[in-house]
Amino acid sequence: MVAPSSLYTLIATIGTYTLTPVGSTIANLEVMHSGEPDNITEKPMNTANVEKESEINDIVNNVALKKELSESAEKLEQSVKTNAESRKTLDDITKEQDHIADEIGHVKLDRIKELNEKKSALLKKIAAIGKTLRVEHDARFPHLVGQPIIVVAKNEEDTMRTANTLAHIEGLRDTMNKIRSPCSSLEHIRSETLKTKRSSNHNRFAVVQKTLDSMSAEERLNYDLKMIEHYEGIIRELEDGIAEADEEIAASWQSYQK
Image (tube, rainbow, N blue to C red; front, top):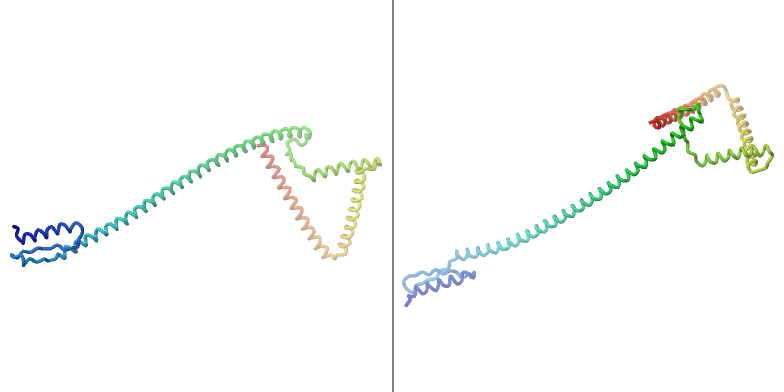
């Protein structure tokens, strides 16, 4: 037969190994043998219980920490993926921008080249026309050989002035031949207008002369000084304009010779 003390020891040992793996909170019993079965006492181990609960809490905390770290890692991975996609999109935009800039640059270069070719063709044509004009001008006006040729573009006023001159010539011819025509009527109107204008100018001169004669010597002197200053200013403006025109003509002539 098995002694009672050994039996109790075996039961306690089996209970300990059975309950511990499932996380039970039942305290381990310490069996103390005092010689008789009635004197066997059971004492709970509070220290082991605290350690086991601490271990369980550590495990729970570790699980929560791992979960939090896992979520943070997923967010970080997603951010990295988003940044990579954004960078790729930005690179694509930059490449497209460079491609468009290259195409625009090629278009500009082609357009500039085309315009330069047209400019060269026009300059050659102008040079040829200028040489022909120079030869014909010098042949027709020998006393102006080597002098600058000034070409003035005509406008509508020049056309009207030419037509008026031609009408005036035809009107004089018709008037002399006593022929009534639109040109002779125009010449008659023009003659009457000139007579009226001359009469008005004569009357105006008489009024001005009468006013000057009525001035005192001091007033006349002051008037003459003012008029001299006025006309000297006009003369200076004319001289400056003539000098500028001469400079422009000389510059254009030098440019043509080059």
